[in-house]
Length: 346
Image (cartoon, rainbow, N blue to C red):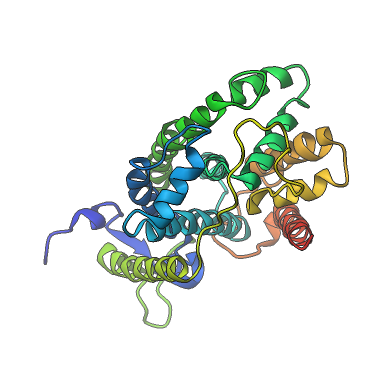
């Protein structure tokens, strides 16, 4: 028998056959990892052209798109990898909830995965700001001013984000640093910790493995790696198709430091924060931009300790023991989707 290769060594020798099926996990965790690595691979070359100053940022984006050889493709790959990452990571979170895979002893790994998703959202927002056009400037202005609504530390948070009393060159440099280093490094470390905890907690959440109808109870890691290779090829093909036929957004440049909202009459939040923008049309900024998102984050982060502390029903789709967790997460998901669609249609 051939010796295990590097990728096979990342997995335990055998895996429960039922939980290794694509129809159980949909390969969402592996897809998310592949897309994050794609962001790094496509992001590093972009750093050689991008200039993080208010005067040159938008122009450097246009240089990448229209002048640099295949720069349009590289930028599109980076953009669509970020979009797909948030989608696959969110679906991965939902799969974990509805299959009861967050239960003991995997509560802490649930928290690690949720933190990775939150940091990925911030990573995408920081990349959105780096376009420095009329859409992103308006969203940056509104987003940073929302932080001022936080009791006691609001003004401090605002100055920490923008680097002073107003949005300036310093703001762009700070967001560039967060995007290329300050968020990427923690996410990489947390992904490694997350993968380690999967192995330490007994592998993927599973029921007792028993053979059914002559089928093996467990499969080898070689077979699993082969399946993952097919899924990786499929997601990369999708990524290239999206990048070839649909360009990343590009709005007119913003005049440096023209003042909050002076350049645009329509504030365009990134698609993953449109639901918050919809709430801002209904409620005061403190509630729509701080209280409601904070409640949602806390409910999801503490789900294994607050909404479902039972140990039965692991790796069983829609098990009754996790009904409250399923209802709360389902309601949050439906609410976010509805608000996003309503705001997108505005």
